[in-house]
Image: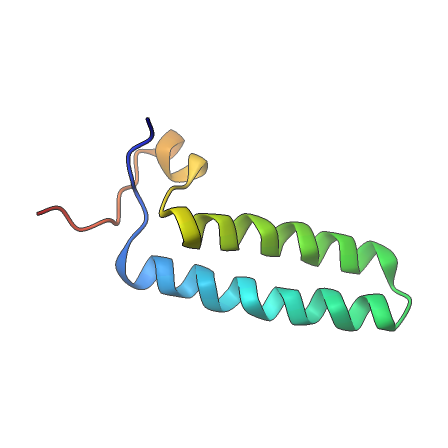
Length: 70
């Protein structure tokens, strides 16, 4: 249905930053900074979704494709 448009370094960077944002969200939650925790968790969810599926809606809208083709 949707074509992959995230690959290579871009995909790895999204996975690393998404994982770091999970830690930030958890730390903010423990520090009782709920709004920061929610923002970090939402950002993390988006980046990790892009990482897992190799698809990005914003890339699609902007016509960016970093996925290698065979």
